[in-house]
Each structure stands twice: as structure tokens, then as C-alpha cells.
Image 1 (spheres, protein in one colour):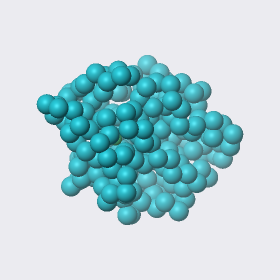
Image 2 (image 1 turned 180 degrees about the horizontal axis):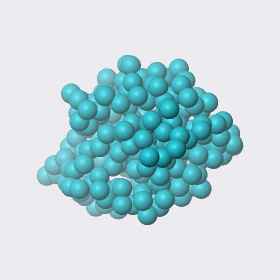
Image 3 (image 1 turned 90 degrees about the vertical axis):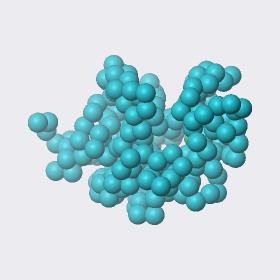
Image 4 (image 1 turned 180 degrees about the vertical axis):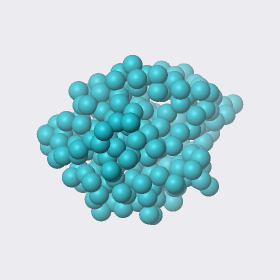
Length: 213
Ligand SMILES: [Zn+2]
């Protein structure tokens, strides 16, 4: 049993990719993805700073299996910057699938950060694109606002949430994943692998009750 965590104005809630295509019925559905939206709304009410990410790909994005001849979703392919898992077409700019969940209370958010917009480079992370060097500017923005701790939640635990959390740690933030406010894809053991990397990086795994109690 851990003691409650007190949220202050140096904390940010980072709500990752709560979009139609990642919800049941979407192009890249995460099981039970919609069930975390009310919980994230409750969490957002506790934070002075709420930042939101939105996967936002141009048509024909390099992460789509459909643009690689003979490739199928969930295969890995070597691209210019390294190995890339290929996905069904998802979160295409301006489509219904890219929209944030209608029940997600966005009013509390000071920022909606769109990512994955470069045609040839994916970006699971809210901080650094998949080439490992192109910054989104988010770390600098949060530091300029005095943020010290990042509390990440959303979809999916083992991809965009995990990559964002690892990059947040690398940028010097104390970083927490609110486990029950996330859902995972968990393909090819990806969830265990993500937790192993996050544990090694000292990304802290917490539950929402530690913030809400
Ligand atoms: Zn994507």
C-alpha cells in the first residue's frame, strides 16, 4: 500500500492518444481503451497542467503497412532510422479516426500536441520522434513552465505511453505511469518488455487512487 501523492503546480498530466482509432471499433483498437476516459477526466481535474497528445499522420505514412509492398500490420520493417513496427492505417489527419474521444474533457488541457506528422518518421513519443533525434519541443515547453514531474496515462501503455515516459525520464523529469489509466496493445510480449525498460529507467508505476484519494 503506497501513500497518496500530493499534486502541485510543478506536475503535469500527460494524456496520450485518446483517439477514435485506438478505441474499440477503431482501425488500431486497444481493448477496453474507452474505459479509461472517465478516470482520466477525474485525474485531469486534479492537475493545474494537462497536456494531450494526438497521433496525426499524413495519408501514406511510413508506419502504415499498406504503403510497404508485401507487408502486413504488426510486422517489423527496417526503415531509414531503424526498425519500425507496421500498423494498419490509423489516425490520418482530419479523419474521424484521428479525433479525440468525445467524452474526453479537453477543457482542462493547455496543450494538444500533434505527433507523427513527418511522412517518413513515426513518433510514439510525445518528446522525440522515432529517428531518436527530432524533438517535438515538449520537454523545453514543460521546463519553461516549471514542470518537474510527469504523470502519463492513455493509449497504449506499451507504445506511445511507454516511449513518452522513457523520453520524459531521459529529459530529466521524474516520471510516473498511472497504470490503471492506461490500456495496452500487448502484441508479441510488448507490454512486459515495455515495463522492463521503464523499471530499468526508474519510471514509477502507480495507480490512480494514489492521486485521487
Ligand atoms: Zn501512429
